[in-house]
Every structure is written in structure tokens, then in C-alpha cells.
Length: 450
Ligand code: ADP
Image 1: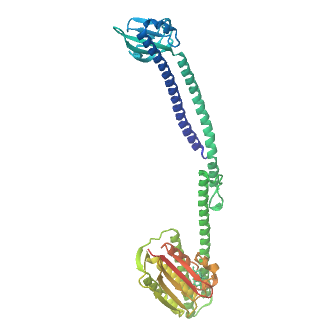
Image 2 (image 1 turned 90 degrees about the vertical axis):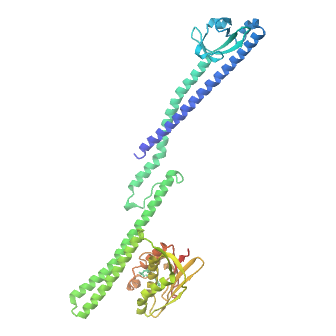
Image 3 (image 1 turned 135 degrees about the vertical axis):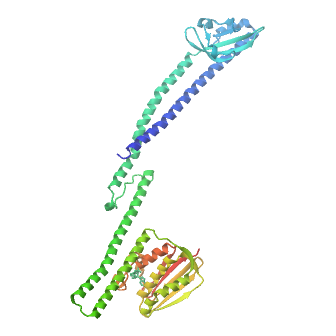
């Protein structure tokens, strides 16, 4: 199952960190409680030794009264070897110092003859001709018992808490990871044939929901790309089929009945025309395929727009002359731009070629180069049929022709403007169209001025 090992890993990490926290917390509690209890006992014993010291200094005979006072029933005064005074309780308990833990002055533990533990505090006081040691003791049993109970609670409680956390963590991780399992199962079902399916998005705002949304967006883009590719392939095949059919028909007719060399040369002429059309189509398809693959290396340089416009017009002059069209110019000669000259040439070639193709004979075409504050513009105006508003956006799509039959007669497959649009775009430029049926068309190539 998907997420299985992740589930265990999450649980393990969670339990491990919780164990560390619990152990740290338990140790801190134990240390703090022990320290507070000992601090309290030491204070108590300090008060006792202070009191004993005071009585010893004022009137040693009253020491036996201390014996009966609450909390001071266990003490002894010695000069290190000889016992000067010791209470009844001390004697019956037969208290021993734990020598290493009791220095001349200090706090530690002592053991009675019967094995009971005591906390002890000793102070060294100045006697008339010697130094005496006062040692006061307090039963350790109660504190030991409290600490033992606390330790028992912690030792039993911690493993129980950790086990519960482990079980809870495992279920929690399972719940959290369940959507990943269903997402993975769904993703597995999706292939090129059912790209319209989407992953379930349970909580769109949490991390998994966002992941599913991003994945779904990717699927959407994939689906769009696939649809576009399918359409492109279908359109391309369709466009390729027409000239091939013409070629075959013309060839078949020639074989079947033509004898005259003049007729042969006409047939070969029209076949070559179709071959030319095919070649151009294949070249355009190749160009668009490269464009899709982002494989175009741009050679950015500074050049004069007017020069480029004139060069393009020179190139297509023959076509215009064939239709006795007049190409005229209004060029601001000094406008220069930084761009890839070759691809911008392609844009203007396609725009001017269309202007010539779709305008009637004897009409005029005007090429303008001018600039605004931020833009350099090449406009190509023709006196053709114009383009209806509903087609103005779509003519930039691949294979789109408002009037397919008419365009084909003129040799177009509907790729010219798509190529021009792409070529402008990679130069950070755009193409705009101003046109209405009957008024001619103006295509504007608009470049930003750096
Ligand atoms: P094509 O290869 O068919 O010319 P384009 O992409 O260049 O393909 O143009 C798409 C369509 O836009 C053409 O079929 C034509 O109908 C229309 N079009 C383009 N330029 C002009 C123009 N200057 N005047 C009128 N129609 C045009």
C-alpha cells in the first residue's frame, strides 16, 4: 500500500521525539522535586544547628531541653573523637556518620545501626579550648518514600504515555496519509487516453489538497497540449493530403490521355506548383515544430527597422508586380531596435505576403515605420477585403482561415500568421490588427524600445 513505509517512518519519528521529550520532562521533574525536598531538609537542619549553637553558647545545660523540642530530637556534639553530648534519640538510633560524605561542616547522609537512613548537617564551632562538631539529623524515610513513589509513577507512566503516543501516532499518520493513497490510485489510472480525469481534492487548502490541485493543473495543461497536438496533426495531415491528391490526379490524367509536349509541360508546371506548395507547407510545419520545442537560438543585435522593411518589400516586390500593386513607404529612417533580425524578417515577410495575396490587383500597400515614446512600430496597410471582428483573434491560430477555399486558392494553409505571432513573441513584440470588412487591413508589429 502506498504510504505504508512513510506511515511507519512518521510514527517512528514522532514516537522517538516524544520519548525524548517525555524522558527529559520526567527527569526534570524528578530532579526538581528531589532538589526541593533536600533543600527543605537542609534548611530545617540548618535552623536546628543554629539553635543548638545558640544554646551551646548561652547555656549548655539547657541542651537537654532541646532534646524534647520538635525537630531537634536527633543531635550530637563531639570534639571529633569524644562525644560531648548526644540526645536519647541519637543514642538509641546509634547513628553513624558516613565519613566521606560528612566533612567537618556540611550536609550529607548518615546510617543508623538498624540501617535507616538519615540526612545530617554538621557545623564546627569554637569551644573553650577545642573545636566541637555539632551534628543534627533528620529521618530520610519520608523523603525517600516520596521520591520512590514519584519514580514509580514516572517509570510506569512514561512507557504507558509513549505506547499510547505510538498507537495514536500510527492511526493519525494513517489518517493523514490516506488521501495520498487514493491520489496515487487515481493517478495510476490516468493515461494519455483519459487525460480528462482529475485527482480527488478533499481539502483544497491543506498541503495535500494543494498538491492535488497542482497535479490537476498539470493534467489540464497536458490535456490541452495533447488536444492541440491532435488537432495540429489532423490539420497538418489534411493540408498535406490536398496537394498530394492534386498531384496524383494530374499525374493520372497525364498517363491516361495526354500526348502533346505542350500539354506535358503544363502538367509538369502545375505539378511543380503543388510540390512548391507542399515544400512551403512542410517548411512552415517544421518551423512551428521547432518553435514548440523552444529550439530557436536568437541572435540579438541592433539594426534599423526601415532597412529591414525595405529589404522585405524588395524581396516580395515581384509578387506585387504580378498583381500590379504599388508598395509605398513612410519610413523614419533612424529608428533602431535590439532584436533577432531573422525572426522579425519572418514576421514582416508573412504580413506583407498576406497583404499582397489578399488585396486585389492594382491596389496600394503602405508600409509605415514610426515610433512612440516606448514603442517602435512597423505597420502594413492594404486595401484588401478586411477581416471581420469575429475572425480577428482567431486568424493567429494555426490552420485557421475564415474562408478556407479562397485562402487555398492563394496558397495559404493558415500557418503564416501563427508563425508571425510566434516570431514576434520571442522578440518580446506583438502584432495588432486594425481592420473592418471593406476597409482594408492594417497589421502592426509593435516592438518595445529598450
Ligand atoms: P494563410 O497561409 O492562409 O495566408 P495566415 O495565417 O497568414 O494563413 O492567414 C490566416 C487568414 O487570415 C487568411 O486565410 C486570411 O483569411 C486572413 N488574412 C490574413 N492576412 C490578411 C489580409 N491582409 N487581408 C485579409 N485577410 C487576411
